[in-house]
Structures are given as C-alpha cells and as structure tokens.
Image (cartoon, rainbow, N blue to C red; front, side, top):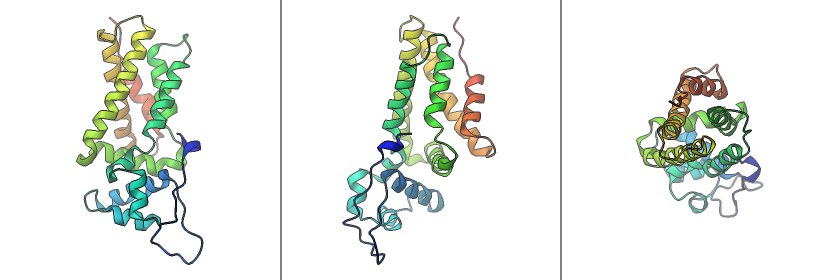
Length: 206
C-alpha cells in the first residue's frame, strides 16, 4: 500500500554508468532489491554498497532514504499503519470489532500478487532474521496498541480491559501466524491465510 506516494530516487550521483539514461527507481524498488539480496546471500553478508550497485544508485543515495540497511524492510510501514488506522476509523458499526480488525489487516497487508515476491521476502526477514527483530517488535507493538484502543472504544471498555488487550495481542499473533502459514502454503494468497488464522484466533468477551 502507499504505492501512489512512492518517490523516485535521485540518480544524479549514481556511480553506475549504463551508457544511456541514468537508472531511476523508487524507495520501494530499492527495498525490494535489497530484500532479494538478503534472502539470496544472507543479511549480514550483503553490504549497502552491493545493494546500491545492484540498483544503480550510490551509497550516498541509499542512506538518503534508509538510515540502515535493515530499514529497507519497513519501507511501507508508515503508509500501511496510516491506512490501517483509517480503515478502522471507517469501519461500519454494524460489524463486530474483530471483523473490522480482520478486514483492515487484510486490506492493508495484501499488496496483490504482483508484490508477492517482495512481501514474501519481507515476511521471511521479519520472522527469521535476528538483525531486524528489535524493529519488528516495535512495529508489532504499535499495531497491537492500535487494535487494543479500537476494540476498547468499540466495546465501551478500557484499554486495560482483558478483552481489549486480548484482541490486540491476538491480532498481532494472527498476522504473524498467517504470514508463517503463507510462506509454507504458496498456493494460498496472503488474504486467505489471514482469514484462516484470524478466524482461528478470534478472542471472546467473557
């Protein structure tokens, strides 16, 4: 998501001379190439210089958009979270809070089949690469808080209520489990996997 807002990287300081028009790419495309290299060669073994050279930009351009090489994994994070919050705000009051959360997760994190390689690479790195775990935990916490507050508001409960807290944690767990399921069930779409896991982990108010 957020593809309409993807910027184009400045190619002027690119060290790669392709004998024609300078290479141009977006932060998202740069991130996609970086993730591919991480998967193929290993995160620690892949340098910023190698990423920049593969895309056709300079090291300086890379750091203009990403403070560290691990930050490429979160290239769409702000756009995704903003969309997720908007979808929850716009959710019909006629559906349950959990149904609203499920629909918002699916609409936000299903980027379409054309982005499957990027999304699968990102999921694999988030789930299994130690170097990005600290950042992943911060992202998960942000989404958990958003869900907890939404459910608390929709059910006239406190953020500290057992049900609201359970919903926040369950949503993050369902998303993680759905992506794990997706990585091993390649014939399924991420939407299908998320629907399965969100249905399985739905919390109940008691």
